[in-house]
Length: 460
Image (cartoon, rainbow, N blue to C red; front, side, top):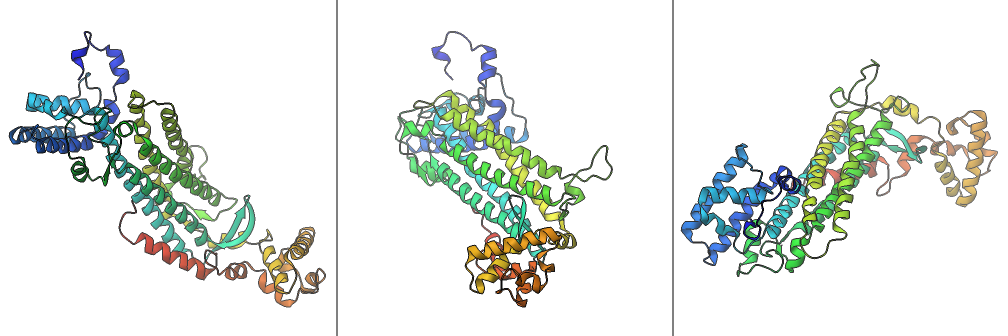
């Protein structure tokens, strides 16, 4: 592509080092689509005749068939997928194929390819996240009756519906979809027509190009357009947040399915055993998701680090926008699928959940609320109930096991009706507020979640 300026051939070792064809070949559908659109734009201004355009179009069809079938032959001189396609195009169409480079640079072409891929990647991840949301909602519906211990600091805190806990992850994924939608919108800008740096020297109708390629708008500054990879960083940030939330869900499942908790049983199809210990069923899928989170976060950090010191405009560093992104995309989609399968097939042990509710004094706050309802200020109620809990700990009793006389010794405001406030079921039922864990409030959350997921359209 630049042979006229150089007297020597590129060192083969350096060519291998600098080539990206081994990994950016995945961009070929976008590159060919961009080339078709550019060919049409050049035809509109008379640079390419109708006959020449037909010849180039037939050659592009052939190149696409070869790439689709895997019969395309890459050469050591193919620096990237863009040069490989152009080289093959000239082989098939003859010198007229070279006209396609008129007024266009690899800089704006590859930037356009990446933007097209990022837009589709965000939609793909959002679709997989939507599937996981569906699995979480289905399990929340199945176990709407089950009350489990809720935790803060991994210490028993207050009883909650198991469905309420699952729906928390639905909310996390909803925020992730908003980030994915934002990233797709950031990518929805056409750089093609920016040339190498200063803009194309031919009066191309860029808005028409944008329409052809599915972009809503065109870039406003050619220097920024060819050197901008903020959209890749934005997508990687969205992917990273998906993985952060998947890792949190994975950790929760690992805890829930441990023998000490025993709340959840994983399906055999989504767990593994031990080569030594016959009794084991390991949550390897969740553990791998938790571990793979680092790969995606690493891709984001690498991308930001690569961008931080670049002068205007294009620099070869920007080639490093691809491998990490491609790997992150594959990783997050695979992890979403694994978590969907794991969640959809797990079962909850309601008997064990009831056992876990005993002890832990999880309704202590409810007893304090009871005292407040009788006129006591909350700080004083907090102190009184703290003394009640201390007594329970000394005597090895739960709150529900204390007799009325025992409680009244702490405050004359405590009457026989206090026992109706200290059961896990009563505690859950009292929290019938928007976003709360009461059955009615959770059913409202479920309805909103079902309506969102059954809306049909991909959120990105």
